[in-house]
Amino acid sequence: MRSHAGAARFAWNWGLARCRERYDAEGRWYSAMDLHKLWNQAKKADGALAWWAENSKCAYQEAFRDLDRALRDFTKSKRGERKGRRLGFPQFKKRGRCKDSFRFTTGAIRCAGTTVTLPRLGTIGTHESARKLARRLENGTARILSATVSRTAQRWFVSFTVEVERTIPERHARPGTAIGVDLGVKTLLTGVDDAGNVVSIAGPKPLRASLRRLRHASRAHSRKTRGSANRRKSAARLARIHARVASVRGDALHKATSDLSRRYETVVCEDLNVAGMLANRRLARAISDQGFGQARQMLGYKTAWNGGRLIVAGRWYPSSKTCSGCGTVKAKLALSERKYACEACGLLIDRDVNAARNLLDLAASGAESQKACGGSVRPGIAGQPPANQEPGTAPAGQTGTVPRQRGTAA
Ligand SMILES: [Zn+2]
Image (cartoon, rainbow, N blue to C red):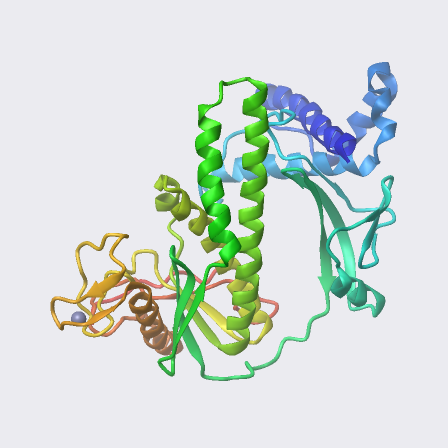
């Protein structure tokens, strides 16, 4: 697997060097197909590349495809046709500095539940069972399109891209139910539903324990001399703990989001503030931010699978700073303030519950005005950006983003 990952990295760098040359000279590059042809000539002509045959040809081919995509994303970003941060020209990959990863799209790719069969690598036992997928493959409701193998810390993972036949219900099993969800630091998530119930899911205990270990390990790591063997060891240790935190958190999020999307037709959460996320250097916060994006993504597709929908509040909607009782907005609310105390109406309420309640209210007003095809306005607060619906919540066959609606003052 290391050899395949090395081959993919080599192919990327080899292709990138060719593309860079051509881009500088002619302003264009080679497509994945062109690179594949060039590579086929080069590997036979150059004796130093004789090792290529040790790895599946997919490793090279897919690296060229990835490079092609990266270059296309680069130009799109340059032209302003791509959302998000400006992308630079793709960079060379360095062993140990990049993620070890490669992909298979052709050949014998199978999954039998506890084993995975891949071209060239043969049948490999897996640590976790993939029975669900194996069953779907058996009864023909799923088809594997590709298998990506990657390494995180000391472990190798395989992930399949699968085409699945899924029956999506016309309407959610519990129509009319709604929940506002606040993703927090202290708790994994806090929700308030339309019946007024508070749903609070605390972060799993192993997560808190791992976070503590992570703090210790990163402090220890920072004390090691650069370039030393001890530093390398502590880096590996740090990576292992990071991987564990991510997987424990991911697991808890999967369970929580599956549960929520089954129980509620409409789920509302706040938007992810990417800039703020990067600026935050506190460990716990940074990690919860990571989970935030994950949770939102999960809620997006899981609500759709259940016939429900996810509504994301506008980026600047002050869900935490607004009083859920009277609508007064506080100018400042420190992250350390766990209780929300309203000076206007005297409401004293848990911070997360307050935020979740606001999000739920936003859903009610947002959903109504979406039906009316107008900009939605939260009663009591003028000029707030209204909710916008997530992609993936659109009916099957329709994808893409629903354009953000601008709020108008009532
Ligand atoms: Zn109030």
